[in-house]
Image (cartoon, rainbow, N blue to C red):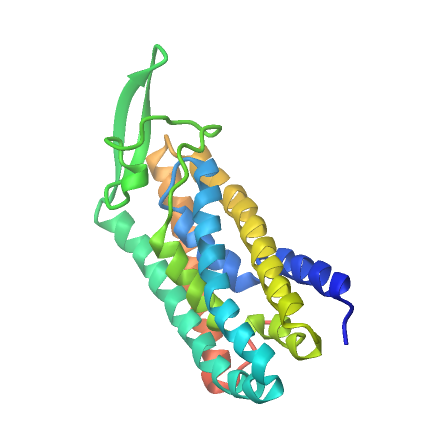
Length: 246
């Protein structure tokens, strides 16, 4: 059995690392195309992390109660959720191109602080709409907000098999209380790590926000990556190919 302190520390460190998994980064990069303020990625990434933690907490508690029996069942159905993640990535990529093609990204010029300048806004996104977003700029995260889309994408990732490495340790934890703490700290590490990653991914969109053509190219690259990665993931799960590293 793992010592309580070691289990808690390991949960937090695994959470920090888990957010950097390729499928997570690809998904969040597609979402980041909707924002022109990189610091808002704090709330987008945190919403994803909360969604990711939600199913793991429920599954984890069940595993703590029933040990390997439930873990074996979960490992058997996890590939179906993994395939769903691939389909979701393809959808996110297509959504990026849909937004570019149909003009949901539009120019909005206005004046504040004595200078006139241009922003690109996504009309379907209330946090990025000029009527709602009162403070522009890279260093202004604005008020905290909950991003439902990121939350539900996080739930899908949480159900997929990539989190199995975290759950696999649960049967070795003798105390249910420590086990819950382990899951909670894993979730906290994931939330913090993904928030920072989303901020970093938002920088290119913030920098190119005043240049429509360049911004469309950057957004298109993120969309293409999401589609290709999602298709490769679905192929690996359904057809047994090895396009992506294990």
